[in-house]
Image (cartoon, rainbow, N blue to C red):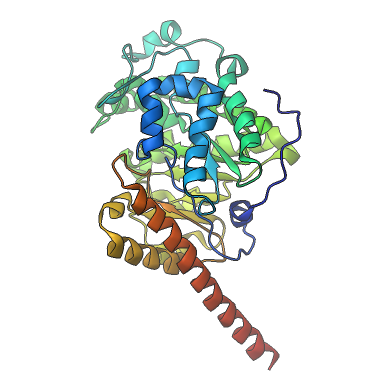
Length: 378
């Protein structure tokens, strides 16, 4: 599908305004992994189709991207394209399978740096290897009909490198960490190669129709502060700088999410992203103090609260939205992706409560602002 056909006008730009630091009438809200296994309609789709088949088939990716938008009509302020961070290792020449009950699996992971020439393509043609994602973005943007903005994304270089070496999920990342400690030069070479693909992929997503971008450093917290500064932060910074330079006036707001990297919050707010997404270990007041209004903050309720029942969900949302505020530089979200067995009713209550509390807090903030202006004039 061509991106040259004009897209429908956007009817809800709340999240884009929040990301740009503009004042909003309430906090926008969306949820990481909102199109996924917790939805019965998605599980039904998976009976018929393999996970990566859905990713690679634009019509199917569009269909499942819209599932939460349709189910929670008017409650979500953004959609995120249905894809996976591991499409980049696939584009680089590696085989990735999604194994039921296990998750991603690399049958032939990188074991030693000497294997890189044989296992990785020397040059990745992003527009050939990942055109299906661009087509899905364009198709979804049209199908959304301007209801909400569409978010594109990538996995961050360290996280992708770790998957490529570990061969899947890991509790220790011992193999990937062996690389950075024993083979630092080769590790940086691999991280640079992944970064190049990430940059081109993100630029292509915007040109295909993505209106916002997120970079997922899902395993950032597995690195200590020193190692994060060496093997994660420079590449996150490079991505923001290079994507914006390539897009110029087409640039869109960008979000970085480094799960578990609480020690790096101040640094993450200074490397060129409009929004920093937070996991649930961050205190809103402290996060705001550290970032000093430089960025919009996103997050950060513990996804497990959605198992806690109505009272727990309402109380957690109250604390979150009141802690961050509702009209200035804040996007409500979970502190990580929604879990596969969360009841759809819990998700609905979360979204409705964010709306209700957000409007209440916005009204309170407006009264305070009016009173402050009166005092100044007086």
